[in-house]
Image 1 (cartoon, rainbow, N blue to C red):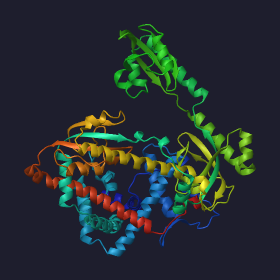
Image 2: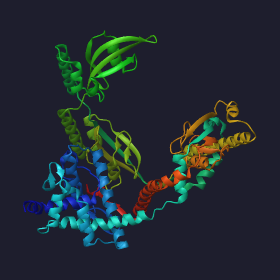
Image 3: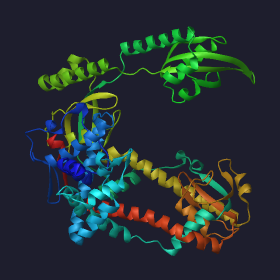
Image 4: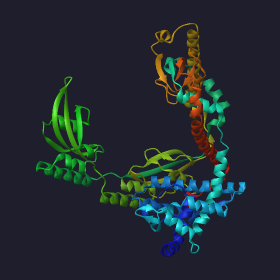
Length: 607
């Protein structure tokens, strides 16, 4: 009875948990600084209560924020921190998960799938919810106790199972849709045999590669008339969608002088401990931040001059056997070095050394100081203007030109899709973003300009069109050369004889190998693999284009096809292919649903 009472008392908590876990299949996290997501929502934008809309299904702010806050707590419980870059990634994952679930729910209605009482019960019996697998009521000796779980499941005392029933009545029909779509994927007999031929048959080959360097750019002429004709014929290719220009100021999150001094003082303290008798290897195992050093007592083995960064190398080779050197500052941090020995190898001096690496990390006081400065700048930028604040703070204003609405990366800042959402929101020119944080900086953006949709002028795209035409002409000329080479081979010349006619040609001998991995000196290509499988001993392929070269191969030998082994492997290969095809088929189907849906993402306008 105690277990049931405990479960009932926690039903409202578990309900939220299972519903949000249902919406979000990924473990994701929270907000910078621990703020509640609702505190970030503005109050003066249109669609105030909507995070977005998928077809006719609205996603209100509360639904989105509750899901995100729940996962935020899960993330924090793991002791992980989040900056704006991470938050962008997590917000996108939440959004994409909700979109996918709504689209799947629409398909459930279309196909008419339901979950029966028996299916719900059997799912609870055979697949206990993950949240209950971790519930203290069902843990015995640190492990999930299925017998205890089944006993409680078999003796319900009230409505404590309703949250899980609700979850499964939604989840199981979606699983049926997914299973049905995946069942449409098929594998043919020919595909199974090709897979066997790739994985189980050994092919001995020789190859001749004719690289693009055979045709220099200087040999190719591209006229203005050709460029203009290509432009006029493909003008739609040069339609530039609406873009945005932004300005931004960043405050790098870097260690201060005091952070460096703290590490230096600690390094000197370790040196004192070593000189007074403590074991270097033991201290290295405890304190070094070289990933491999903890297990080896900081041992670096033997190395020659110039093999390490200069300050480290100089310190080692200017010391004597047995010396303790440091602290030595490099780009990696402070090092304490123990010189074990010297030797001569092929006339070159080598040293055997150990080290303890202490990285210089940003301290809490420095972090808070940078954060405070960035927040003060953001406040002043809103009060006195972006440029005036930048002048007052003596910080550089940087620019982003022609930001595309599909951009998720900002040069120099990395993954930061919230910048694009801000830039393409309904905010007017001159608006400032929230203060965002990346792994290495706090950043504030200003929307500077809207560049309307337009056709790029011929002058703007002239160079890129010229490069495309030049590449096509080089490849066409290279193909003609490859065809001439093939004709010579068919006339009786060997690959090695042809190789001797031009140092640019590359001849390769490929000993017996399977085709389920890249071929030495050639790489991989479906066309090349298919050609080799179809060839008989002694046959030569046509020229096959691979990145930057044409390749001609000759099949010298291949192992015999073993029908008995094929019959034995056939079922396994079919299962492997079918598993891959099901995933690919389902992903493509889901992408088609997404492309066809009317999706309105309003996150940029509400927070």
